[in-house]
Amino acid sequence: MRLLAEKAARPKPSRPDSRRTSIAILDALKMFPGPIIELHISNIHLREAHYHNSYVSLAATAIIAGLGSRGYAVAVKAAVDLCAQ
Image 1: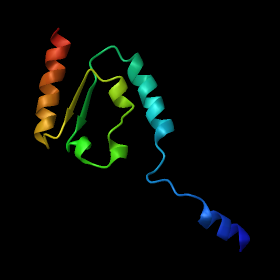
Image 2: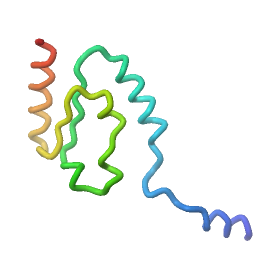
Image 3: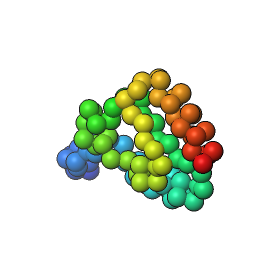
């Protein structure tokens, strides 16, 4: 019983801890020689504070947010344009 009570008393994270995965993805993206476009369908800055920071943003060439599904077309065009440079 005591173990259950101790476990219940531990603070719970507000979201799943994805930091290890995100750092691994950031490391991989830093090695990628091409353009990196981070795309968010919603405007992450209008959401909860923990959505405002992204490890991917640290390696991104461009960040697109808040355009809904239209963001995909914008991201593809941007990637094509950046690759042509």
